[in-house]
Length: 220
Image (tube, rainbow, N blue to C red):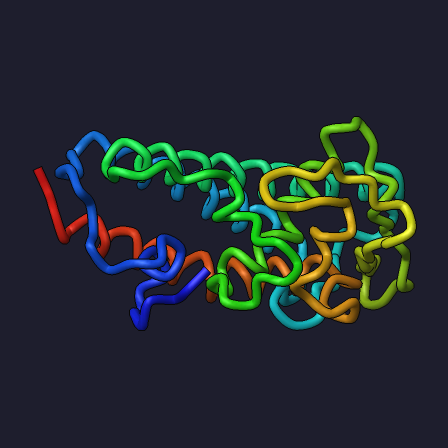
């Protein structure tokens, strides 16, 4: 996949700078914005559990809260975020397929392990898509919430990724579960909350703006 010389992430994803072949409608944009709003809301809810989701990702709760309840709440919020991100990407893909004279497959958002030219949004997002896929099996074995002690009336926890228990089903251009992990170092994946924090505040927000710019090239 070529980045086509453009700084716009959607152009890079498509491999050209032609913009929409057919005019983008207000309804298209309303759908995309609503979907993005849900992603932002789920991120905010997840970030509220942490002292700083983009750096340490340490989870802070009131002292004495049942550990199982903490685990389940962390899993719920992570699940909500990655699921809404998946839905957003599918919403964008649907709009692209309506407004372009080409078919955009899931593989555009799930680059193969040797596709180093794919935009960073797609490459870094592949791991999060894999988490969402793994959750569909009904368990969260690839994630572990571990206590890090108590201080000043609060209990502290850290969420870690257990690579050996990751069982996502390959999709798009991916041939194996391991391909979901190919675009980010193990050290980055080890702690999913800072990974999500960095992805959302940088790459997701940038992609959201890039999509708006792309749509403005041909509006109804």
